[in-house]
Length: 352
Image (tube, rainbow, N blue to C red; front, side, top):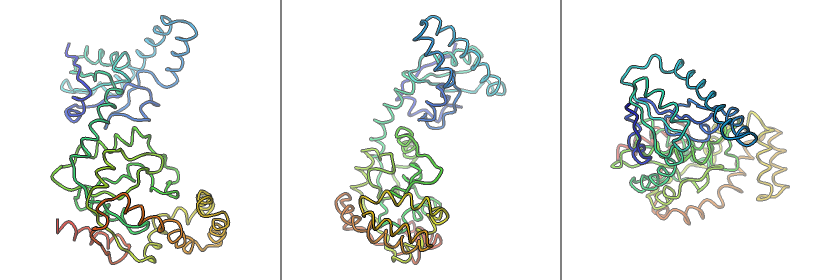
């Protein structure tokens, strides 16, 4: 037998060395969060876990174990037929479940008996999660950052995308959070990840970055929609040098109309989201914005959103939270277009 066990801390550092990382938990557990790059081979599916749990509570432990064993055996057989028959002897999987117990152990035992070199994570996902959280704070402190600042619509995300396309290290928190970080930042039809999954996504990106090179990152607040930026990362960001994009208001409005075109195409959805501003801006103001939007005057509504909602608190927030904002280098792209941001990214990287 070649079955091995490693600690969660060892798994953090060795993920890339395995042929495959297998999550033996149910689909629902996997969807909430998983190890970076893991594939899901449920030993028990969501509905089966409920059935076994009910048997455990309403009948007894022995009967529940028999039922569970039958279900697990069936599922492992299906995984073998679907995923394993074409694998070479050198294939080396890393397997885990919730605590590294029966579900991952059963799958690992079968694969081990076939002749594969199989590794289990001691303590399973629960231990790995604790190790990742601790390591994430260390990773965040190890790197150095260039914080891209600028009021709403100034092109921060476009600049980050241009920098990434040209080979810079970019940590795009809004992309990882699947949210544009404002009351209007929800992306239609796109669910945000769980907090655990958001943390894992950040860790996976930072893990692959070179600590000798800067990371470009946007000046996010603590929350990006419903998820929070990890404490260690937000602390490092707020102490880092800043780059400030200056873009005329008309260009900002044009950019927002392009980037939030789904609001222009679905005015009812836009008006629904505007309702969230009633307490902050007043019902009469919001009702006026909604009426003008329905009449086709979205551009003037966006302009007033900048002037009355987004901009007033921006400078105060930046000065309060980012210690080097006052000495930020000013950047003046020639326009809001992607081409202009590409030019700006090239000039920044040429100077680096």
